[in-house]
Image 1: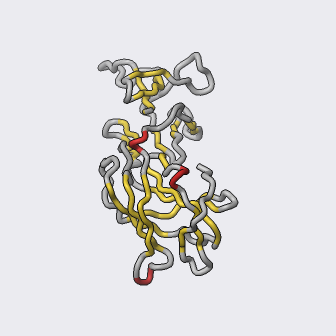
Image 2: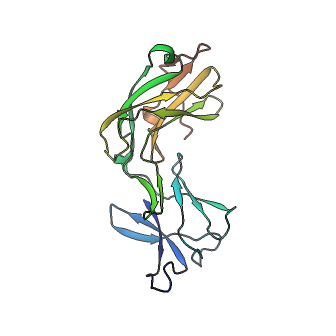
Image 3: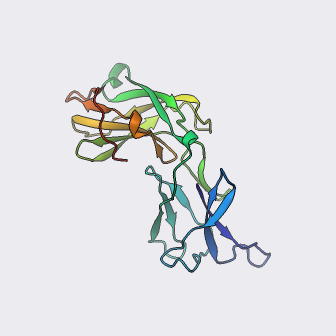
Amino acid sequence: MRLLTLEFVATANNLEPNPAFFFEYDPSSGAFTEALAQGDPNTPWIDCGPTAMVNLPDGTVLAESCTSPSQLYIYTPSGSPLPQGQPTIQSVSAGSGSCNTTCYHLTGTGLSGISEGASYGDDEQMATDFPLVRLTSASGKVQYARTYNWTRAGLAPQTRGSTDFALPVGILAGRYQLQLIANGYAVSAARLHGWHLSAGRRLEQQRESMRSRS
């Protein structure tokens, strides 16, 4: 699904006419379905201009409220994401030199997702077409590694690519679930495996799987 905000046709005297409506677009069927508005399902969102949105790592969408700068909203999509948008992990190896205990190299497919992310013309671009690495401890604490040296940021669905990532500062030794995320779509639970971070900050894959917490 894709989330859109639509307004009435602009005129010379009203370039951004109110109200704005939320629609879910299903690319497989080409259908548009109006989504519920904020707080009141019977009325559209009265917006005062462009609405910035960004795709979050858990698959939800963060949207701003133009009428209240201090108010943010979370949109939770229905249904399942497209299978071709799911990234995969093929290998994780240690870095080299002085970085060999804090930095790692990951290879896989679909690292840049199948969408650039969100945008409002040439005014606002909230791109998420790059890989994220999420580490979840056995107790459920979630941390993100910094990714860099991406093979590409352009769209290349199911194409093999790679990224380097650096462990978060202060991360504790223990067992972790490592996930690759692109456009809010994480590696499936069936492909997840437990990883152990030693006191020497060496990340090693374990044979037993950890239950997905995504």
